[in-house]
Image (cartoon, rainbow, N blue to C red; front, side, top):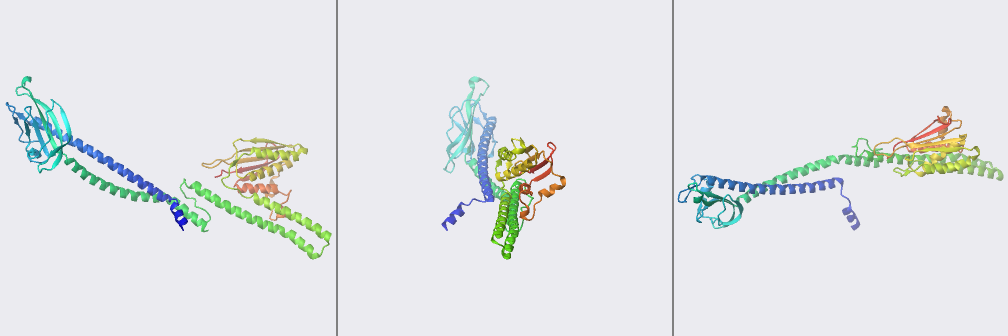
Length: 472
């Protein structure tokens, strides 16, 4: 039970769960970074706006303040903002004179403002937050903007005196704005996040629907409700479904061949067994019975050997490694040239170095061995083996073209079908009666290829052409 629970915990997440988890984490990270960036941008904008606002107030006071001849200040009766007229409003103005005296706006009545110092002419200074005490006695902070100016009562340099204008604003204004902005920001981002997560869930469901359909089709195939996968799938899944269909068809064909082979073998053995039974029932002599038993046993042995060889060469494994053709061809030709040394037959190669056989080594040897042996058997002196890559298709291994020609008498067109036809009874397919070419045709068919028999244009004899299509 513990192992079952552990296996369940270690089971990989589904593709949908993976995509939703990744999208959720990415979306949350994006919203968090976007919120942080907007928050920092708003604070910077608010701070810069406050600085620019205080600067404008300073320049407004600088244009409205008048000095009497004795150096007394005569402020404007209409300040740039009504808050300068309300005590403790949070917006304060202060003018520092060379004598150390200061003038403050009506709003500065009550609060204890930060100490102000003189600035040099045309010097601007923005600082804060500076400590202060509000009208109600609570501590607070303020941002301050100052500008150093020079005034001359009669326009002469010797009568000039410097003064500084300060405008201060309670530091709590910007934090209040930031709090309001943050509340609205995170609420809106939260709503947007929920909507985007729901939308992402719909997108993931829609994008994974083809995989879900493939899964459903595969379940129907496993339950026997369908014979193969459908063909209407996105092009990314097309190689997968085609490979599954090819595997299904290959397994079915392999099973059918096994059944046919066993059926043919059983049917073929009926005759020898029937002969033996008839001899036993007839009471034949020992010598005659022994001779008949040896004959029928040899016949049955040949039948079993052939049927096993045919079953071994039926079908092939998908996704096999590429096999070079020339080494196998050379090995086969060396043996055949020794067997047919009396007629002096030789084999010439025209093999493309890039050509490869994608299948089983035994199938390649059966193809080459039977075709070359048939060519040597009927050739006068020359056999030609030509191999080159065949047709190609996107995302598939290339096909193969294999041609064997000889300079023998050739095969009449009206006999081509008969020499390739498979007999129903196994004892009709013995050595010298088309076994080799029948095996070749079975192998070619198992690779979904084509076998063509005609006349060689170069050598004048028979020409066997095998064309294998692009594979998976």
